[in-house]
Length: 144
Image (tube, rainbow, N blue to C red; front, top):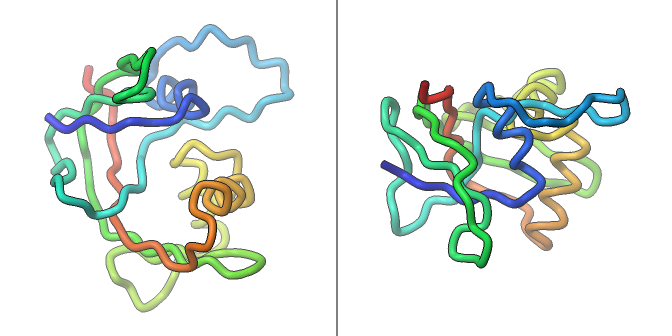
């Protein structure tokens, strides 16, 4: 079993992606997208493999940590994100060609963002000075 930690902003999108009731009335002002994947750096610990159960937490190793839900890993792929001053490219599985703009939008939405601009803003805020990121994208489906 592999555990991943997420920021509070992703709790509702993850719950939506797991098919859970979130208790929010959609008044049309929020564009909530179900989160069904996570992008992670390669580190000392191995990442999930297809078929493995994932435990998705909010704020691991922090006071108030809680389990958001469980999922089953459906796929893991290499991902490279190249940021420029105005936009970014996403390259999957070491392809020579990056995703098309419409594919980047779908990718960003699968990652729980409103759109590619929301994702770009998040990356710039969370990873200042980072121009190239290489890691994995882990996709999931609900466990039950």
